Structure formats: structure tokens, C-alpha cells
Length: 257
Image (cartoon, rainbow, N blue to C red; front, side, top):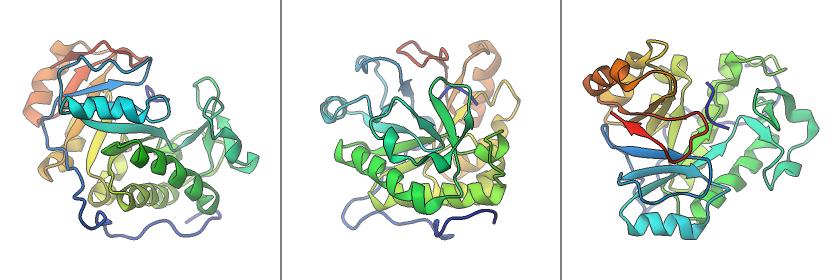
């Protein structure tokens, strides 16, 4: 769940170049400064007047996505790619060997992202779902397990390989893909990702680290939970981030800059 901030086995995992979209279907490239709504809790409320919605891929239907499209919105598919969730319909597809420690959210456990051959087909099926429902992009969550206590000896190299694989899977389906947090690996991953999603860079005085995305013409969708708008909006506007304050449960409420 959103809201928190070469070792091992496996095979394959993406090369160094960004994957082109399928022929005849240009990939959406969100530009800096676009306003957005991020709602993962409850049925999507389409009344917020912004051009971009980021919503749960499992909990929303193709009809929900089509309704947002009719209103002129682009729609991002939230998918957890770094942790197992016992409440998802495909939870039984994950063998116990890839399940690690709890990550602090109820019913979730970190994944052993070194096991590329096991996880890739599961993630491909999930991204197929996003594409079939008509989403324009994917927000893959928890792509920085290497910096957490997962129960596995994950390295930065493991994470780079996995994250590039995730980007390749999205691009092969004509979907844009956002880099969620993982600030230390922005230099290596910028060519592979079409935008960024960040939580709490202002609270930790790290927002300038996202500037490479802005300089590349790629949007940075940013939220703060604890900081009042008065403490981060001036800097967000200077950096051209798409910033707002949200409550941790990511319901409808939002307070944009």
C-alpha cells in the first residue's frame, strides 16, 4: 500500500535502454506542472477537476477508467510490485519462497525481488490488467526494498535490475511508468521512467533530488502528509513539481499547492 515511505538468483531483467512503445501507439508523457489526484481509498470520485488521476488498478474497473477518459483525464494504475498483499485476487500466485518480512501495512510482506523468473510473469499479468482496463500509465509501488529490512539481503544492484524490468514490462504494453520514491537511483533509472511519484521529499529536504525528471521534461507527482502547504508549496512551484497535501489513507481529500 502506498503511504510509507548482482546478488541472488533470478534471470533477465531489462537492458540499459528505454523500451519504445508498441508501433502506432505513442506513450503518454506527462509534463511537469500537471495537477493530479491520488485516490487509493474507496470508490474513485471523478469530480476533482484535474487532468491526471492515480487510482488502484485492482479496485477500479474499465468503466471507471473510461468515465475518467470521457472527462478528459489521463489515468495511472497503482500496482504494488515490491510487496505481497494477502487481499489481492492473485495472492495465491506468489510462492512462499518469495515472501519476506512484514512491511508495516496489514496483510503485506516484502518480496524477494532477486527472484526475477518467479515475479516477472506475475507482474506481467498485473500490467496486462492495467492495459486491458484502458489505463495510460502505471505507478509501481515499493521499488526500494533494498533500503528496507525485507528479510532478504537485497542490494542496490538487485533493485536496479528489478526496477528496469518493471519499466520494460510497462513499456511493452504501451503504458507509461513512474518511478516511486527511490531517490538514490534516479541517475541510473531516469532513462527508463516517464515520470516520478514522490512522498514527503519536502519533509526530508530532498525535493531538489527530483530535478533531473523536471529537466528531462518529465512530471514529478508529489505529496506531503504532515507538512502544511505553507512550508513546501513555494519550493514546489520553484522546482515545477505537481504538489499537494494528502491524508495518509489517500482518500478523496486533497489540498494542492
